[in-house]
Length: 233
Length: 233
DNA sequence: AAGAAAGTCTTGGCATGCCTTATTCTATCT
DNA sequence: AGATAGAATAAGGCATGCCAAGACTTTCTT
Image (cartoon, each protein chain N blue to C red):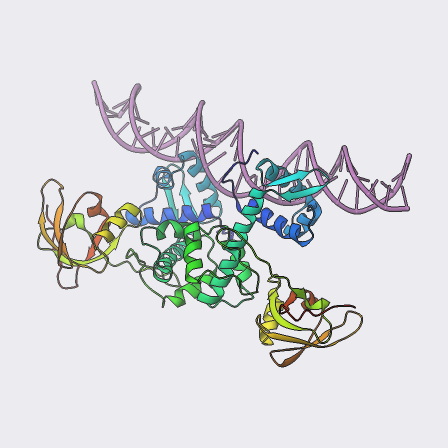
C-alpha cells in the first residue's frame, strides 16, 4: 500500500526487470540467490535491496521465501522492458547497429529514455510488436503478448515451423547465427536429431545446418495453428 | 601527472563541461562560486568535487584562486559537448523533436552515449558541424572551431548579417523564436535601435520583428567576411 | 523422526560517490 | 586592522555495493 511513486534508479529498474523475467519463467516466487546470480551481485547486496523494494511497494518479500512483483512492480518492469526492446529495434533499424550489439547499448539507454523520446521512437518504428531477436515489445499500455513458442531442444525430426525468437544474451551466438544466415522469420525443418542431447540437423530457408549446445536452448520456433508437432524423447 | 584514466561519471562530466564553458567565456580561472551557480549546487559540494577532479588530473586547482582544465580535462569536456550537440541535432533531425526540447534530453543522454553509437549518429547526420541552435560540434578528434559572432546586443542600425546561433538554455525562448519564424540561417538587418538598452527593430528574412531583453543577449549573428559592421553605443 | 550437514538468507559493518549544512579560514577592500 | 565576500573543511545523509558472521530452512542420514 505504501507505494511511493516515482522512485526509480537504474538499480531499482534492473531488479524489477530481473524479478519479472525470473518470475515468469516458472510462476513462483523468485529466490534471493537466483536474483543475485542473474544480476551478478552478492546475495547480501540483493537481500538489502529487496528490503528496500518491498518498502517502495514494488515487490512483496517474504523473508527466506522469495519475492514477487506487485502490480506497481510489474508495471515498472514492463516499462523498462518496453524501453529496452524498442531501443534494440531502433538501433538495429534506424542506425544499422549489428544485432549482436544492440542489447548492451539498450541495457544502458533503457534507464534514461524519457516518455517523450520513447513515443517518438515507437512512432518512427510504426509501433512495432517484436524486437530484432523476436522478443515481444510491451504495448504503450504495457500489455505483453507472448506467443507460445518451443525451443529447438524440444523438437523432433519432421517438426517444422518458423524460427521466431532467440535469446539476446550472447552476442557471439547472435553473430554466429547471422553469419550463417539464420535469422528470425526463417522457415525451419527438423531433419534429424542425434541421440544423447546431440545436435540437430535442420534446414533454415532451404539451407542445411547442424545446431547444437546452447543454440538449441536459445532458439525458439513457432508452429502454425494447425501443425502442432509433438515431442517425445 | 597522476591522471587516472577512464574515471568518469555524470557528475565529473558535468563539472568538466561547465568549467570548459565558463573558462572560455573570459579566459581566466573559474571560481568555485561561478561553478556552484551554474551547476546549481552549493559551494561546499563544488569545493569538495574540485579537489577530486584535481586528483584525477582533470583540472588544476589553486585553492582560493579558481580552477583551469588540464589537457585531459579539456578533452573530456569536448567529448561531452560533442555528444550533447550531436544528440541535439539527431533528435531534431531524425526524430523531429522540437528544438526547444532537445537540450534537456541531450543533457541526460550525453553521459551514456557509447563511442560506437556516437559514430553511427555522426555518420547518419553526415558529420555535421553545427547543432540546431547553431552551436558548433567538436569534430571526432575534438577540434572545435568557433566562428566569430556578435550578439544582437552589440548591433547598430544598418548592421546586417546572418542569424547563426542562439543559446539553447531557455526552451521558452526557443519556442518563441520558432513561433515567430526566426530561425538560424535567417538573413538579419538591423533597422532601428531604441535607446537605453531598449529593443531592436530588425527584419529577419524580410519580416520585421521587435526584439528585446534576453533575446538580444541570446541571439548571435555572423557577418560576411567583407561587411564588418561596427558598434558604438 | 531427530539431529547434523548443507544450502540459503539476513544482518551488520564498511566503502564509495556525491550531495547538504554549518563552521572555519583566506583574501581583499577600505 | 577589521569587515566582508569567497572558499575550504568537517560532519552527516542517502544510495548502492562488498564481505563476513550468524540465523534460518531444507535435506540427508540413520
